[in-house]
Length: 347
Image (tube, rainbow, N blue to C red; front, side):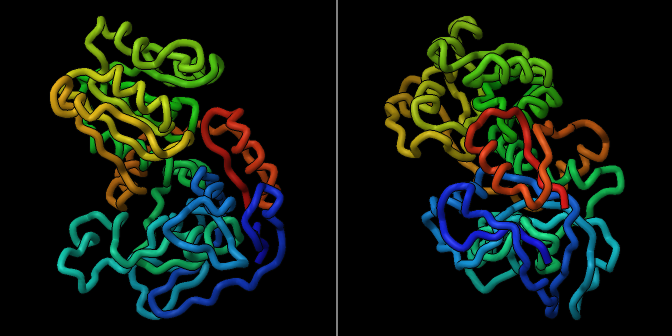
């Protein structure tokens, strides 16, 4: 099979288009012939070697999201057959374990004690084929295209999980940081779907204009004005009820300054440095802020997003498509941050 392969960590130039053996299927396995492949910032971290919790064995095929058709099934597979339209799940788990608390059984397979991650601890989606176990696979509704599915598995599902953790309500005002990114653009749409007032922030006016087109009520360019101050001015000095955060650093710190009493902040990543100085007194005395994070996404949230996509309630924002052989160029664009929405590799 053809694949974009890395044999060392580094910049986009380490991604090389070459031939690899097509994976064999064993008991419980499903082989997927991929049609569309989503590009994610996590792929960039894996490529650069900036994921500290697990090493990457070389040669490695990155990629955490994609969509395709079942090409082969192993013994014991009953829920899927050749020809089914499917999407693999980033977190590969077995559904049960011998631990005192089984997170998969509680619906938190995204924090399974024994899971692997496609594109990280095992080969990922930057290839013509990928092998996963049947527990780490979902049927794709006929009304959802492979392209839309490949761009929604991480970005929309992450945004949906953040909204659930924040308990976002129609009466809330929500600040969506990095609204030009894949997760941010998804969060803007979901906020509008719920009926909340959406304030979008980004570092360029062009990205903010796109955020308005997606439904943002107000916008803030955090490279021109202090984010926290601007959020309070837009809310009559009260502050926002919810912040959906994915920038980190100074933007995260200013988000606390712009959050209302009893506000909720949910983070799902960091483009800036991951260490941020926060005045803990704001938690205890002044604002009673709740601060939490989300680590990838459980299958149930992905199912919910696929249903919403199938109904046309949500639609991923596509920045550009590339050929699988152009993975290096796609990563160069991703690193530039000069885009709004998602990048896709077409097989």
